[in-house]
Length: 251
Image (cartoon, rainbow, N blue to C red):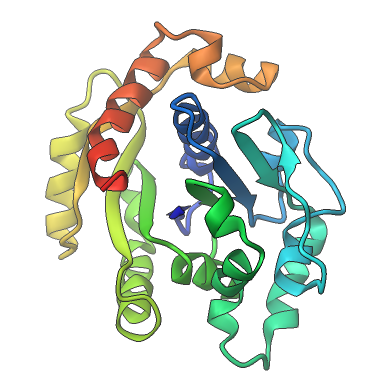
């Protein structure tokens, strides 16, 4: 099982939207995909109407492994709710607290059952996110094109570097994915220039996700952008992004 953690310290940058559509696209290729909602705001869980007592809190803290909720044959989710916010407190004092999620994914048998696990993170850099990074093979960082969105990026990269040195030497940054991009901006070049200006040597995905009304409409209908309008800019951009990262996550 390959685990992709989607994270950013800032909210509203498209983490959940990216998780939804990447998961759907992988599932459409007959890959078995497990989504983990680790954000107590539970936007991912609400999208799939998947709020349940069989949730991420139970995976972290419970003695019984929660049974994932089946969205479709190939796409399952372990949901979140407000109780997720207490996971950080419950992890305090535990030995190897940063590896709890990784160990549970193995002991549960999920690593053998699924081809991919996609973790949607809260906008934080807490114990939950550290667990999500420790469990990750790949990290994706959605980012809007405004300069303020770069705040905190250094903290994420520093944490990833720490985890790579201490707990997960195989973690790899897939890249920064620019989202909500205006048609009139040269977003990728601008982002590369901004990263250089901030002294951050991070790969930026060549694909970018344009602002698109279809994303909002798909969300209202609780379906993927590919199911809502496969010819929309949003679906085309997501497909371009998927094809860009596909060789890397399939290796």
